[in-house]
Image (tube, rainbow, N blue to C red):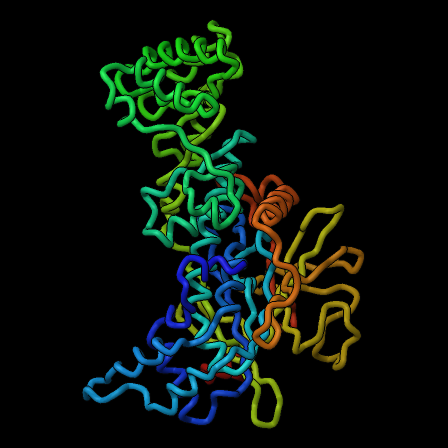
Amino acid sequence: MNRLHDIYRTPLALLTDLYQLTMAYGYWQSGRAQREAVFHLSFRSHPFHGGYTLAAGLGCVLDYLDDFHFAADDIAYLATLTGSDDRRLFEPDFLKYLGDLRLACDVDAVPEGTVVFPHEPLLRVRGPILHCQILESALLNIVNYQSLIATKAARICTAAAGDPVVEFGLRRAQGIDGALAASRAAYLGGCAATSNVLAGKLYGIPVKGTHAHSWVMSFDDELTAFETYAAAMPNNCVFLVDTYDTLDGVRNAITVAQQLRRTGHKLVGIRLDSGDLAYLSIEARRLLDEAGLKDTAIMATNDLDEATIVSLKAQGAAIAVWGVGTRLVTAYDQPALGGVYKLGAVRSASGAWEPRVKLSEQAVKTSIPGILQVRRYHQAGHPVADMIYNELQGKPGDTPVNPNNAMNPNNTVMVDPFDPLRRRSLPADHTAADLLVPVVRQGKIVGDRPPLGDVREFAAKQIGSFHAGVRRLLNPHQYPVGLEKSLYELRTQLVLEARGTMA
């Protein structure tokens, strides 16, 4: 099933920035369109001042790539674009080329739900440079946002400490697209359900909901509102109790719960949406328990996030289910992940690969050259370090081709990309695995495409495998990530050459 096609009913090749197409035109016109290149998608810092990020969005990336082509009406639209001289921007032969284009790229990716760290490639795209280039904007759009929301959801679920978290963000999300992507990513990140029914249909996410204040306000009194709702939906009763007076609302809910019990049903829960949630939940729990309704859950909403949930728990709040909306789907306090898509290498006319590096006055923005892979090292089943290496220089543990400039096969050394004095040896007895795996070959999807529920379980196991310090919400431990020593040296050499400061 291609869920993006189910939503839009059209290919999304035009979901791009204009400069991707003007560069593609330049590649085509200069005869460089088929030159092979490698790009990497990564990010520069964790969101929310956290210690990890969850890679998300790959399922939607594969939907996008699986249906990638320029439709006839796309080409017709591009033919209307003009430059500063009011003449057409693209000549007809190029538009015909786009109309006939079928992707010939290879894509390797970390499995969706993998815990990842700054500067590590989440996606590696290899193929004709024109093809790689026109994918940039859409890949960043999908991966940036969903990774951001999945990470926020994981943090909120960590704060909830095993209590169910329900995503209620549809009405506050950044448009229809943002709402659907947020529901998907939030479920991946650990939320138990969503209020978004379309997301439930498209992605197989459980859907949950109660009623609004307007339901209660439409009746002459609160008790009648609850009784009428219970008569209509006796198997889905969660009453919102704070329309007028919260504790009186709890008492009315108890009255209807006793009526439900006589008909073989039960009150599933009550919802608190305002006021002092700690105090009100404790008092509500007392009233419910005294009425013999110990299995009636208390749900809380009202602009919750991980910090608020931690605070409420510290106050002894008797809340069992957390409804989180605005601050989850809008990634409250960090609106973007800041992922980038950088060229790592191009193949010359002779067939040799040439590494490329982008310079910057800010060290964090200097790119990493080569055809990159990430190797994760484990000890006693737990991740202990990640090393980024260049496949053009061989794999860690390989016998050196050039003993003077190659990896030590027995004791690989990695270097902090921003502090060459910080180095770490990775003994050969550590178990290790490469994170990037094939997902597309020559434009065709390969390998498994697991259901979202399976990805969610994988993400939970990933997070749980890391040291508690990495998962900590405040002042987390910095997990070690570095460049393989020969890659660090190559990068340094290319930077010095580009700046004309080689000794």
